[in-house]
Image (cartoon, rainbow, N blue to C red):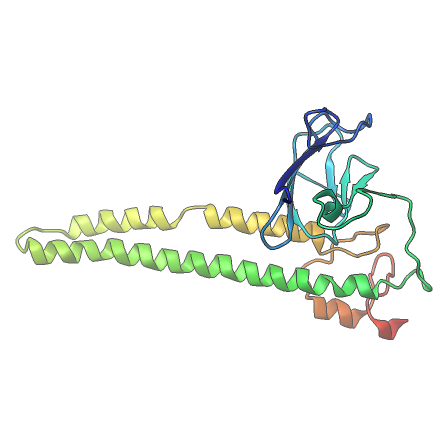
Length: 228
């Protein structure tokens, strides 16, 4: 049975032990999510946990993202969870076998899903919050009408104002903003140039825009086969 959560670090009580001096005793906790993604959480390690070169506290990643413990230990998440066979620790100095060292067209193609998922999930958060606001406000504003029908002689204009204020408090919560911030943070460490020597964030320009541009403005990694 595949474990859903694995702790990694130097201490023997971890699920996976890396006995290296730059790895903390309890370095990170990694969760296997239902959709095949992974949630990586740094456990206040001394030297940090990195996704695609960016130090993170918590981030949701895929098998295509590079996850490092400290500066040098790259781990293969599907192998760690025994989803596939192989070596857990990747060679940090390994060079991809490419005819053209600037050809990152295959790696860049995978970023289309990263961008589309980001847009889809952002819209879902915003729409859900909007619907919740409408539902709560409608419910609160209906209460004075009920009182009017039941207690016809009671003056309720003041109650209407109070209830409207309460409705605003309920619908003005910050949970959706927290979700948007988490989504943005994940996007900024995943929607990056696939060249591991660059990892420049590709801003919020669409995948199509970058595909048409054809290359990374920083390292000149090639995104579009027409540029080869």
